[in-house]
Amino acid sequence: MRLIFLGAPGTGKGTQASVLAEKYHIPQISTGDILRKAVADGTELGVKAKTIMESGGLVSDDIIIGLIDQRLAQDDCKAGYILDGFPRTIKQAEDLDEMLATSGIDAVIYFDVAEGEIVKRLTSRRTCTRCGYNHNMIYDPPVAGDRCAKCGAPVIQRDDDKEQTVRNRLAVYAEKTAPLIEYYKRQRKLYTVDGAQEVEKVRQDIIDLYEKLSV
Ligand code: AMP
Image (cartoon, rainbow, N blue to C red; front, side):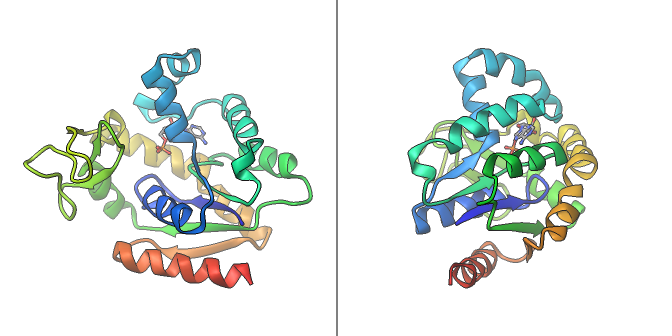
C-alpha cells in the first residue's frame, strides 16, 4: 500500500509511521530524516538545507522531488511505503502524481490536531542524538533527565522545536501544506484521524483503516 501521512509538524505522523512500517514491512520515507542525515554528514545538500531547516522554512521543491524520485526507485519500495512529511506543497503533490502515473497513491491519512496542542507537544519534544527516538517531557520523558529511554544516549531539543521556529513551521504549514487536504479530498483519497487521542488509540485507528483499505 502506498500511503501519505499528512498533517502539521508535531501531530504524530513520524511516530505512527514507524509503528506501521514495522508492522507491515514497508519503508517509512521521511524527507525530514533524509535532510537531517545530509546535514549531519555535511553533504552539499545538507549545507544547502541547514539554514532553511533551522528557520522552519521549506527546502525547495526541486531538491525534495529529486530526493523522493531516487528513494522511490529503490527495491524496498515495490510493495508500498509510507511518505512522512512529503508532499508539503501542491507542486510536490502534483509532481508525485506525475511520477506515479496511473498507479497513484492509495490513501492519504490526515492527522487532525489543534494548534495549541501542537505547540505544547513540539516544544516539549526531546530527540535522541543516536537513535532519533522522540521523547516528550510531559508524558514520555527521557531517563535521568536527559538520557534516551531506548538506547541511553543524550537527548536534545532540536533547533526547529524551539518555540519561535515552531510558530514559523506552523505558519508555513498553514500556507503551503494545509491546501493539500482539499487536494486529496478532491481525489477522494483523504482519511482523517483524530491525532489528539492517546498514541495507542491513534495507532489502532490507523491499523483499522489500513486493514480496511487492504481488502
Ligand atoms: P520534519 O522532520 O518533517 O518536520 O522536517 C524538518 C524540516 O525539513 C522541515 O521544517 C523543512 O525545513 C524540511 N523538510 C522536510 N520535508 C520537506 C518537504 N517535503 N519539503 C520541503 N522541506 C521539507
